[in-house]
Length: 243
Ligand SMILES: NC(=O)c1ccc[n+]([C@@H]2O[C@H](COP(=O)([O-])OP(=O)(O)OC[C@H]3O[C@@H](n4cnc5c(N)ncnc54)[C@H](O)[C@@H]3O)[C@@H](O)[C@H]2O)c1
Image (cartoon, rainbow, N blue to C red):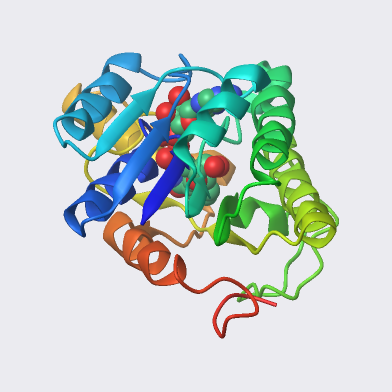
Protein backbone atom coordinates (compact mmCIF):
# COMPACT_ATOMS: atom_id res chain seq x y z
CA UNK A 1 0.00 0.00 0.00
CA UNK A 2 0.97 3.62 -0.38
CA UNK A 3 0.61 5.60 2.81
CA UNK A 4 0.60 9.39 2.95
CA UNK A 5 1.74 10.49 6.37
CA UNK A 6 1.85 13.97 7.87
CA UNK A 7 4.24 14.60 10.74
CA UNK A 8 6.67 11.96 9.42
CA UNK A 9 9.67 13.70 11.02
CA UNK A 10 7.89 13.65 14.39
CA UNK A 11 8.31 11.08 17.13
CA UNK A 12 5.33 8.83 16.35
CA UNK A 13 5.51 9.41 12.59
CA UNK A 14 9.15 8.36 12.44
CA UNK A 15 8.50 5.07 14.21
CA UNK A 16 5.35 4.30 12.25
CA UNK A 17 7.03 5.09 8.92
CA UNK A 18 9.96 2.79 9.77
CA UNK A 19 7.59 -0.05 10.53
CA UNK A 20 5.49 0.50 7.39
CA UNK A 21 8.59 0.59 5.19
CA UNK A 22 9.91 -2.57 6.84
CA UNK A 23 6.55 -4.22 6.14
CA UNK A 24 6.93 -3.46 2.42
CA UNK A 25 4.72 -0.37 2.06
CA UNK A 26 5.61 2.90 0.35
CA UNK A 27 5.40 6.06 2.47
CA UNK A 28 5.14 9.69 1.39
CA UNK A 29 5.98 11.88 4.37
CA UNK A 30 5.04 15.52 4.83
CA UNK A 31 6.52 17.58 7.64
CA UNK A 32 6.95 21.32 8.11
CA UNK A 33 9.92 20.88 10.53
CA UNK A 34 8.42 23.32 12.99
CA UNK A 35 10.83 24.77 15.57
CA UNK A 36 8.71 23.72 18.60
CA UNK A 37 11.62 21.47 19.59
CA UNK A 38 15.07 20.76 18.16
CA UNK A 39 14.72 20.64 14.38
CA UNK A 40 18.00 18.67 14.16
CA UNK A 41 16.21 15.74 15.80
CA UNK A 42 13.41 15.93 13.22
CA UNK A 43 15.92 16.13 10.38
CA UNK A 44 17.84 13.15 11.78
CA UNK A 45 14.62 11.12 11.86
CA UNK A 46 13.78 12.08 8.27
CA UNK A 47 17.34 11.33 7.13
CA UNK A 48 17.04 7.77 8.46
CA UNK A 49 13.73 7.33 6.66
CA UNK A 50 15.04 8.81 3.44
CA UNK A 51 17.66 6.06 3.32
CA UNK A 52 14.79 3.74 2.37
CA UNK A 53 13.97 3.74 -1.38
CA UNK A 54 10.21 3.59 -0.76
CA UNK A 55 10.18 6.77 1.38
CA UNK A 56 9.76 10.19 -0.17
CA UNK A 57 9.87 13.33 1.92
CA UNK A 58 8.14 16.68 1.45
CA UNK A 59 9.01 19.63 3.62
CA UNK A 60 6.23 22.21 3.89
CA UNK A 61 3.51 23.37 6.23
CA UNK A 62 -0.02 22.01 6.00
CA UNK A 63 -1.20 25.62 5.93
CA UNK A 64 0.25 25.79 2.38
CA UNK A 65 -2.85 24.30 0.81
CA UNK A 66 -1.64 24.58 -2.79
CA UNK A 67 1.41 22.42 -2.09
CA UNK A 68 -0.63 20.09 0.05
CA UNK A 69 -3.25 19.59 -2.69
CA UNK A 70 -0.53 18.89 -5.25
CA UNK A 71 1.35 16.46 -2.99
CA UNK A 72 -1.82 14.52 -2.15
CA UNK A 73 -2.88 14.31 -5.80
CA UNK A 74 0.59 13.17 -6.87
CA UNK A 75 0.87 10.56 -4.11
CA UNK A 76 -2.54 8.95 -4.78
CA UNK A 77 -2.38 7.28 -1.36
CA UNK A 78 -4.36 4.21 -0.32
CA UNK A 79 -4.26 5.38 3.27
CA UNK A 80 -3.66 8.73 4.99
CA UNK A 81 -2.23 8.96 8.49
CA UNK A 82 -2.42 12.48 9.90
CA UNK A 83 0.04 12.93 12.75
CA UNK A 84 1.31 16.48 12.16
CA UNK A 85 0.19 18.81 14.91
CA UNK A 86 1.27 21.49 17.26
CA UNK A 87 1.50 19.26 20.34
CA UNK A 88 2.10 20.01 24.01
CA UNK A 89 -0.32 21.34 26.60
CA UNK A 90 1.76 24.02 28.29
CA UNK A 91 3.15 25.70 25.16
CA UNK A 92 -0.42 26.58 24.17
CA UNK A 93 -0.30 29.29 26.85
CA UNK A 94 2.70 30.92 25.14
CA UNK A 95 1.81 30.44 21.48
CA UNK A 96 -1.91 29.79 21.08
CA UNK A 97 -2.10 30.73 17.41
CA UNK A 98 0.33 27.90 16.48
CA UNK A 99 -2.35 25.44 17.66
CA UNK A 100 -5.19 26.98 15.71
CA UNK A 101 -3.03 27.23 12.63
CA UNK A 102 -1.42 23.76 12.61
CA UNK A 103 -4.24 21.75 14.13
CA UNK A 104 -7.42 23.38 12.90
CA UNK A 105 -6.35 24.97 9.59
CA UNK A 106 -3.79 22.23 8.85
CA UNK A 107 -6.23 19.39 9.49
CA UNK A 108 -8.93 21.06 7.46
CA UNK A 109 -6.54 21.64 4.54
CA UNK A 110 -5.51 17.98 4.59
CA UNK A 111 -9.05 16.63 4.65
CA UNK A 112 -10.05 19.05 1.92
CA UNK A 113 -7.10 17.83 -0.17
CA UNK A 114 -7.94 14.14 0.19
CA UNK A 115 -11.74 14.26 0.16
CA UNK A 116 -12.02 13.58 -3.58
CA UNK A 117 -9.28 10.92 -3.68
CA UNK A 118 -10.12 7.22 -3.55
CA UNK A 119 -8.61 6.80 -0.07
CA UNK A 120 -9.43 3.61 1.83
CA UNK A 121 -8.90 4.95 5.34
CA UNK A 122 -7.93 8.23 6.98
CA UNK A 123 -6.47 8.00 10.48
CA UNK A 124 -6.28 11.13 12.62
CA UNK A 125 -4.12 11.42 15.75
CA UNK A 126 -6.06 12.79 18.67
CA UNK A 127 -5.25 12.85 22.35
CA UNK A 128 -6.39 11.79 25.79
CA UNK A 129 -6.34 15.53 26.58
CA UNK A 130 -9.78 15.80 24.94
CA UNK A 131 -11.27 14.18 28.08
CA UNK A 132 -10.49 17.50 29.80
CA UNK A 133 -12.63 18.06 32.86
CA UNK A 134 -14.11 14.56 32.65
CA UNK A 135 -13.38 12.56 35.81
CA UNK A 136 -14.95 9.17 35.02
CA UNK A 137 -11.95 6.84 34.85
CA UNK A 138 -11.02 4.80 32.98
CA UNK A 139 -11.88 7.04 30.03
CA UNK A 140 -13.94 5.48 27.24
CA UNK A 141 -14.52 6.53 23.64
CA UNK A 142 -18.21 7.19 24.21
CA UNK A 143 -17.68 9.64 27.07
CA UNK A 144 -18.66 13.25 26.31
CA UNK A 145 -15.64 15.50 25.71
CA UNK A 146 -17.23 18.90 25.87
CA UNK A 147 -15.03 20.58 28.47
CA UNK A 148 -11.46 20.91 27.17
CA UNK A 149 -9.03 22.44 29.67
CA UNK A 150 -6.31 23.54 27.27
CA UNK A 151 -6.21 25.10 23.84
CA UNK A 152 -4.28 22.03 22.67
CA UNK A 153 -7.21 19.83 23.71
CA UNK A 154 -9.76 22.23 22.20
CA UNK A 155 -8.00 22.24 18.83
CA UNK A 156 -7.55 18.45 18.81
CA UNK A 157 -11.23 17.99 19.62
CA UNK A 158 -11.98 20.39 16.77
CA UNK A 159 -9.93 18.10 14.50
CA UNK A 160 -12.10 15.15 15.54
CA UNK A 161 -15.24 17.16 14.83
CA UNK A 162 -13.98 18.46 11.47
CA UNK A 163 -12.99 14.88 10.67
CA UNK A 164 -16.44 13.62 11.55
CA UNK A 165 -18.13 16.12 9.27
CA UNK A 166 -15.77 15.31 6.36
CA UNK A 167 -16.32 11.59 6.89
CA UNK A 168 -20.07 12.15 6.78
CA UNK A 169 -20.20 14.64 3.90
CA UNK A 170 -17.63 13.01 1.63
CA UNK A 171 -17.92 9.33 2.55
CA UNK A 172 -14.35 9.31 3.82
CA UNK A 173 -13.70 6.26 6.03
CA UNK A 174 -12.01 7.84 9.04
CA UNK A 175 -10.81 6.89 12.52
CA UNK A 176 -9.51 9.26 15.20
CA UNK A 177 -7.16 7.71 17.77
CA UNK A 178 -6.79 9.24 21.22
CA UNK A 179 -3.22 8.56 22.26
CA UNK A 180 -2.23 8.55 25.93
CA UNK A 181 1.26 10.03 26.50
CA UNK A 182 3.56 8.09 24.22
CA UNK A 183 7.20 7.48 25.16
CA UNK A 184 10.23 5.69 23.78
CA UNK A 185 13.51 6.16 21.89
CA UNK A 186 13.82 9.18 19.60
CA UNK A 187 11.09 10.72 21.77
CA UNK A 188 10.08 14.33 22.20
CA UNK A 189 12.50 16.43 24.27
CA UNK A 190 9.62 18.63 25.48
CA UNK A 191 8.06 15.76 27.42
CA UNK A 192 8.50 15.10 31.13
CA UNK A 193 10.61 11.92 30.88
CA UNK A 194 13.24 13.72 28.82
CA UNK A 195 13.10 16.91 30.87
CA UNK A 196 13.47 14.93 34.10
CA UNK A 197 16.40 12.94 32.70
CA UNK A 198 18.12 16.09 31.42
CA UNK A 199 17.86 17.76 34.81
CA UNK A 200 18.91 14.64 36.75
CA UNK A 201 22.01 14.24 34.55
CA UNK A 202 22.76 17.95 35.01
CA UNK A 203 22.33 17.73 38.80
CA UNK A 204 19.32 20.09 38.69
CA UNK A 205 15.96 19.81 40.47
CA UNK A 206 13.02 18.56 38.40
CA UNK A 207 9.78 20.50 37.93
CA UNK A 208 6.92 18.67 39.65
CA UNK A 209 3.42 19.99 39.03
CA UNK A 210 0.46 19.90 41.42
CA UNK A 211 2.67 19.16 44.43
CA UNK A 212 3.48 15.73 42.97
CA UNK A 213 -0.15 14.62 43.19
CA UNK A 214 -0.29 13.36 39.60
CA UNK A 215 -1.26 10.14 37.88
CA UNK A 216 -0.84 9.48 34.19
CA UNK A 217 -1.15 6.68 31.67
CA UNK A 218 1.81 6.14 29.35
CA UNK A 219 1.98 4.07 26.18
CA UNK A 220 5.18 2.66 24.75
CA UNK A 221 5.79 3.71 21.15
CA UNK A 222 5.92 0.13 19.80
CA UNK A 223 2.40 -0.49 21.13
CA UNK A 224 1.07 2.62 19.37
CA UNK A 225 2.78 1.56 16.14
CA UNK A 226 1.38 -1.96 16.41
CA UNK A 227 -2.12 -0.59 17.05
CA UNK A 228 -1.90 1.73 14.04
CA UNK A 229 -0.57 -1.01 11.77
CA UNK A 230 -3.51 -3.24 12.73
CA UNK A 231 -5.96 -0.37 12.28
CA UNK A 232 -4.82 0.68 8.80
CA UNK A 233 -6.70 -2.06 6.90
CA UNK A 234 -9.79 -1.77 9.11
CA UNK A 235 -11.72 1.37 8.18
CA UNK A 236 -15.01 1.94 9.96
CA UNK A 237 -17.79 -0.10 8.43
CA UNK A 238 -15.28 -2.81 7.61
CA UNK A 239 -15.46 -4.73 10.85
CA UNK A 240 -12.97 -2.96 13.01
CA UNK A 241 -12.72 0.71 13.82
CA UNK A 242 -14.56 2.75 16.40
CA UNK A 243 -18.24 3.61 15.75
N1 LIG B 1 3.46 11.84 21.78
C1 LIG B 1 2.38 11.80 22.56
O1 LIG B 1 2.47 11.48 23.74
C2 LIG B 1 1.02 12.14 22.01
C3 LIG B 1 -0.08 11.99 22.87
C4 LIG B 1 -1.35 12.30 22.37
C5 LIG B 1 -1.49 12.70 21.05
N2 LIG B 1 -0.41 12.85 20.26
C6 LIG B 1 -0.63 13.28 18.88
O2 LIG B 1 0.10 12.42 18.02
C7 LIG B 1 0.59 13.16 16.89
C8 LIG B 1 2.08 12.95 16.76
O3 LIG B 1 2.71 13.40 17.97
P1 LIG B 1 4.29 13.35 18.17
O4 LIG B 1 4.53 13.06 19.60
O5 LIG B 1 4.92 12.52 17.13
O6 LIG B 1 4.62 14.89 17.94
P2 LIG B 1 5.86 15.58 17.20
O7 LIG B 1 5.81 17.02 17.58
O8 LIG B 1 7.11 14.82 17.47
O9 LIG B 1 5.49 15.40 15.66
C9 LIG B 1 4.63 16.28 14.97
C10 LIG B 1 5.31 16.67 13.66
O10 LIG B 1 4.40 17.51 12.94
C11 LIG B 1 5.14 18.56 12.33
N3 LIG B 1 4.22 19.70 12.19
C12 LIG B 1 3.67 20.44 13.19
N4 LIG B 1 2.87 21.38 12.68
C13 LIG B 1 2.92 21.24 11.33
C14 LIG B 1 2.29 21.92 10.25
N5 LIG B 1 1.44 22.93 10.47
N6 LIG B 1 2.55 21.50 8.98
C15 LIG B 1 3.40 20.47 8.74
N7 LIG B 1 4.03 19.79 9.74
C16 LIG B 1 3.78 20.17 11.02
C17 LIG B 1 6.30 18.86 13.26
O11 LIG B 1 7.40 19.43 12.58
C18 LIG B 1 6.59 17.48 13.86
O12 LIG B 1 7.68 16.86 13.20
C19 LIG B 1 0.16 14.60 17.12
O13 LIG B 1 -1.03 14.82 16.38
C20 LIG B 1 -0.12 14.69 18.60
O14 LIG B 1 -1.09 15.66 18.89
C21 LIG B 1 0.86 12.57 20.70
